[in-house]
Figure (cartoon, rainbow, N blue to C red):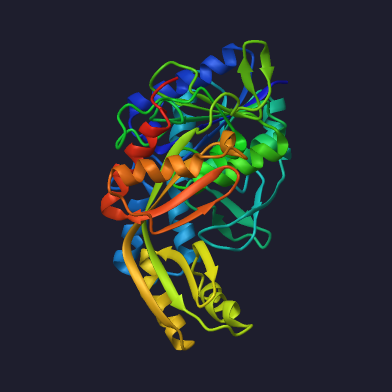
Length: 407
């Protein structure tokens, strides 16, 4: 039994015509003697009746401080509606569809309402339906805690649902269908000449997702990577192979080696809406604790951290700037905040251990008169903090310098 999981995003389900295209994709898989399990997001985008953002706006128009537990109950309805409508579409075409909520599909989570983590998947119900010849349509983005509370998995959570089900069902592939051709070398809204990547490694796409690319949720990539389940990102509306996410690449001698072989940089990503905080600090042994513990307890995420004598600097989301500054000043620190910043990153396994990559980054930005405010790196990424006004030029400059518009 060759199971695949097909996940369809909200834009792929927004209209009746689009849903027919989704049904075509499902039928095509069945014609190839595959057993598809379909995972769906809420239909449409913000402003559409059942989109997640629309439901959130509705709830907060009544109660701006609605508890997250109750908000989860509401926003999970978008995926429930979507799965029921998609199931009806498939049945009308003669497909034996049965619709399951996340809980009915065995998605068990913790109690972190709004951003729950999957503890385990109990796939028995889905497998029973498959054995009976049913086509399962599962509401993504949702699950239930062990105490029975309904939970949601955070933005992009339907990707996580799909990957978790694929692992539990021992599927041979996850297909992520969206409104783009696949994973691009950069955001095509900024770089029109950005290419669709034919293949990319799990590690690279995981880093690209964390650094701002929004094609696949990083939790989904992590789950698939651990179980070595390939993921293919492709368009619902256009034919083509899209982007394969795996450990390997197809070389001239077949599948072998690293996905990054032959290229230094895979893509350029960007993330706006961050602020740089610079904290004047003394040499006390507990300085780092006094700086970072209050932020952690307030749930404020920090990034691009630099610790040096007399100074601690890092970024926080712009929305948390005032709160973070207040917490640090309450500890007796002097804090300077630079708002309206953005993080621009290059990602690629090929840069590991290769001299001169940071020099190329610095030259590309300097030629455009772009100041680097802070940097951080790993063996797969180099990130630079720049002013928000320089973000688009920085992305274009790096994309051009590493010739990512060339195959």
